[in-house]
Length: 108
DNA sequence: GGCGTGACTTGAA
DNA sequence: ATTCAAGCCACGC
Image 1: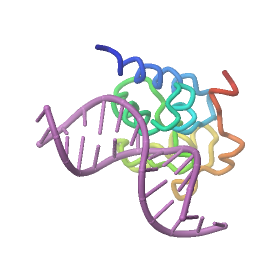
Image 2: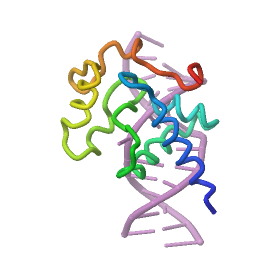
Image 3: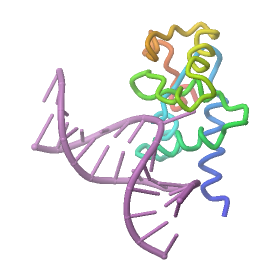
């Protein structure tokens, strides 16, 4: 028991470690956890993290698109949060994604 | 207990 | 260069 929880909490922890005004991708977290091909589980972990202090809005897919915004309360909430942090988001796509990208493997 | 789906990624054709 | 397919693991029915 609590085996998958480890993965979940680990993903939550990494997501929580994302600095202000920065973003990362599911694959980056998954790879950091040692499950590079399990990026989906990271997304599922975020879904399970609903209600926690996990800034899932700072986690986007590898293209910098707010793929998970649909899972937020509203459809603009995720984009609003990112813009509030100084991140430019246009058409659900993050601008300067390459610059704002935060890699836990490199930073940590 | 089996099958399908899902907030993705990477690799090969 | 683009498009297609497979892989990964957990959860729901």
